[in-house]
Length: 47
Picture (cartoon, rainbow, N blue to C red):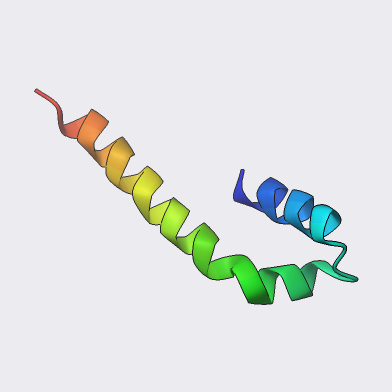
């Protein structure tokens, strides 16, 4: 899922390569992954 967002961001901003986009915005993806993992954990640990 996250890679698709990087591709879309790359296209919208007109970066010449995906690596430029990843260098600039990978921290956003990491934070999103943490949030998703926390939400998934909450669902799995509900009683």
